[in-house]
Length: 157
Image (tube, rainbow, N blue to C red):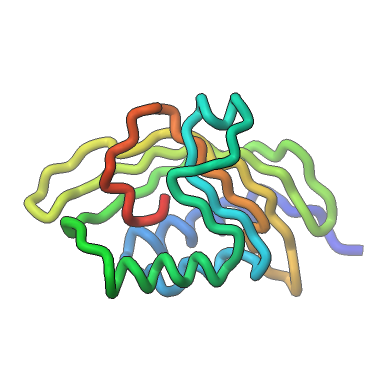
């Protein structure tokens, strides 16, 4: 019998996820998700109200790959980078192969000219599955604390 998903695994997953985005390895980002997944960026108010639409919404790994391709080839936006700081994950529910987890985050954005600001704060609400010894996101709902989200939400959170 396999052991339940634990804190060390969750911390490693979150650290690798943040490193992938922060180091501009976006082509690797979709691999953190199952083929049939949900990735959504929304506000705390919208999440509380149960509103399904998100500022970013993808319901498959293919949609995530398309988003990365669009960022690289089609979208025009000022170059910038992120630095993620994640808090300790809180395991809401865990079994042998699946866990419901909430993790607080802060994302700092640095623009090409060097200006640095707190870009987003909030929490990840995740459904994580273990398949073949590897953790993947079945769902990652990014719930931003602020209702005012910068229009330059190009890079995934």
